[in-house]
Length: 300
Image (cartoon, rainbow, N blue to C red; front, side):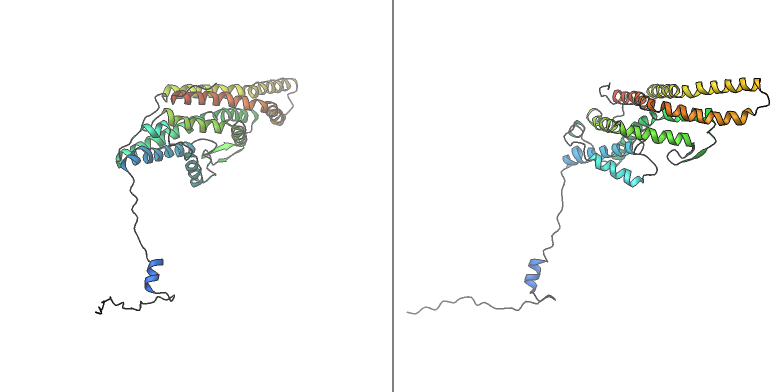
């Protein structure tokens, strides 16, 4: 007996074609797979890694906005922030600061901690800037003693009028900072601060007494650096007084002014080798105070 099997019939349907000539089925298989991927970050990851890392970068940015060799007004702020963000990537994720701190996901708490971290970074950079007042003080005394204080120009870094000698000493100080690798020491202290000072804690050593001690030490070093200018000026003035007593008809003002400037420039040339030692002494005190304030071991 013959049996007839009923097989399903296949109906051929013409699929609409797109502009490129391919069928709609091929078009959707190739280009039409649209899916919305929702990236879900665990709460513990946000509290233990993301927020501490962001706050760490804020501390770095704050220091780079106030430290002398990176806070020049001639460098645009966006470039300084970009450099600080690049350096902040060097902070290890497994450091004690990021591993032991969990932050509450609260906007108010986050902005409070962000402001505190920015203040810590600004304070660290400002302390390093205090070491540069050695050259500012020496430049002011040198300008007053040699009569070059009238030759002033606008200093964009300090937003104040500054003498030509002050601008020269400032450039020399910045060049010495890079030549002596003092900028690397500052970055090292910044990185070590994340291991000793957790987020949300103000350094206990940054007090008014510490500030007075650092300013007094730097002022003393600057005064020692400027003492030769004062001594030579006293000798020149004594010589002018002797000449005035021996020959009253001589115009001492024109002669003394013409004599003071060359003597001062020659003395500056003689004292230039002492500038690195003066900068090292001032920055040694500054970096030592920073290490002690941040809970780090004091450097040599």
